Image 1: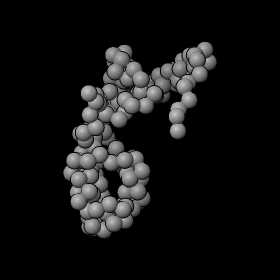
Image 2: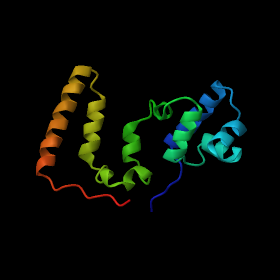
Image 3: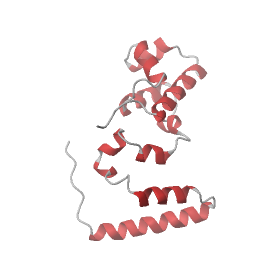
Length: 144
């Protein structure tokens, strides 16, 4: 069974919210009020006990005068993409992310330190994907 329990990434995002809030000298009750939650709920976000929705994180970033990317900087993208039971696997775009070849590709790519080599490889992969997309069936439309 899949779980929606907070992950290490959720805890890291919570820690960064707390750090940014403290850097700006904003209290928990002040931030909570500005984003429309109780300070107890904000505590749960900061402690990594509750997951934060995308919309709520957007609101937090706006109040804390930062980008959403700030909360994710340095997090391991492979861990986020292939972890079991998280929200990442729920979308159609993530079907097959557990594929061992994808994991091998990402791990190998991350080891390349030469920026121009990485750019060249990325360009080649995008060209291959685009060429494959021309012959593939159109993607399923998403329900709204």
